[in-house]
Length: 413
Image (cartoon, rainbow, N blue to C red; front, side):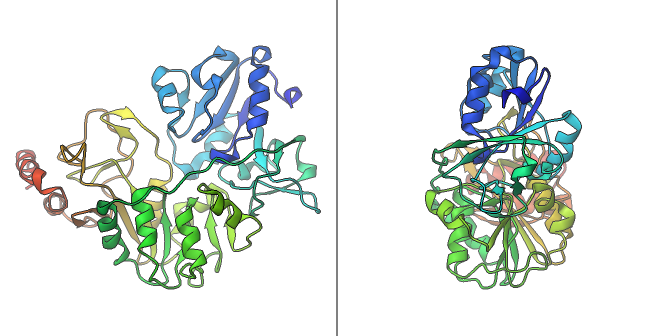
């Protein structure tokens, strides 16, 4: 593998469990022999020495979405962060790299000579046939279907590995999560196609959909909650316009039960993110429902989803992709969900103005419905005055007077 990494090389690595652990271990061991090599990756889950700048310019990480592992490294200045919409990652990487080498974990080749990129398709699958691939064939990687297959003739080399996938245990929903979920679930009709992320609120929403019928899934992330709805017969995709009867995502992350469920399951397909997250594709599904979490919302409806108090926490991901797609969908709905407060109620997450340095992830003109445990604020097509009143109404009661005073001072109401 190291023979394929020259001076100034660009390496592209999938996110999460798509990272080939043994291959990157080998690269780190030989980092002193490398010159100006950059590793491009979203959402790294393995802590590595090069993330902390141990090898200087020999080997440097370029991040496209911060995780709990890379967040402190970004703050320390030992890696770079490139803002992006997830749907545009392939185009961004194509422009930022020269003759890249893709290193990815995959399932072992089948009897036809095809590897599966397993729990991922993401941005990497778009480079099949367009870039050099060196694969790590992990015996414990589930074999999945969709547009993430690569033939042995299309790789410059491959190695074998045998280690378990990283697992994520679903977060147990809180009472506030359940109240938010109830408000969202009652607005989702049978036959809708949905996108939902991971965490306490998304888990609660998926659990609240068990009484629905004929739902479809076209989502960034396949999670345990999606699996539960498929197994219950709630999600069958029969009403979808695209990929009818198939549950479509671009990567999967969850428990071992999820990984076992995905293995050789033809009902689930992983497609490149430039397709899954493309607002123009999403808009072709009528009645599309997008559900995304945010960190703070101001009284205009601007959503700051990637910074906390002006400090970078993650990145844009696919939030704006799906919000725009839902906006253009015939009968589509876009939900932005959050708890009304933080720090045991001391801090309101509905704010008069965003903090200095906070980044707007989803524009006020795109935001449709903002949901807290206190209800739903309908924003699409409404005036600034109406928006402010609606958002104050879903703020925690303890903060409504101060928000009203601030809105008056700003001339919003």
